[in-house]
Image (spheres, rainbow, N blue to C red):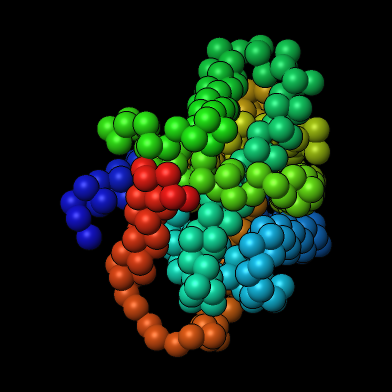
Length: 351
């Protein structure tokens, strides 16, 4: 792996370690968390685990619809398997897109004549997910704005979330303009995110006539976010017997900010950053003990880890339709070559 590609993962590792040291340095907090674990309600944890599973099933159905638009038939079960495999590797590989890379590679093995279509379906899948999460987060923050604007800390976190959404919106609008005016060829290669913008614009071009399918995928994404929120709320309710435990209302208020900021690839899988945000927001706004807030975050993350292990088990028994094994570096090279083809076609107007 090139040094340039190692810099970001190494920074993520460093940030993750520093955040975890900051959160868990207090022995009293560690003792309080260990004591609180004894009161965890396993039935709420089981319900949270089930809700998180519904989220993954819906994500599989969403990607299946996007693939079907391009007449790529992998089957619902195989599509779900690849979603789960991607989830497993997103957790255990350095970086934030390792799982998507493996998912892309194995999907291209299933449809070798439609590699570009597979790649662009994943681009659109990401965008639909981000757009739906943004809509839900903005809706919740609109009704809880006065509460979040009370203190300098929560005000700063809310502003950060809105800045992230602003950046996403600008990239989305630029890609729409590039697509509608066919400006791929004129887009300078030196601008930041050139390949990303071209990928989005090309994907828009491919799915422009499938508005009904896009509407259905946005709707599915909204449902997946509802189950994701429900899973985190169950994690909080598993400690409902403890003083200061937050209910559904406080969790719904803080989750949009937590989910948005942890989507920024600052730490590995958001570890450390997520716990710090829960600790800050729940303690500042609702007086939740810091140790309990961190424990709720870890419990919610644990439900994700359990489903990731399910993805790992699926990977152990997964057999691609077309055999052959490659190293992760070789897989990355093949996926990158598809991006280069997309960029080249855009430059010459042959998309």
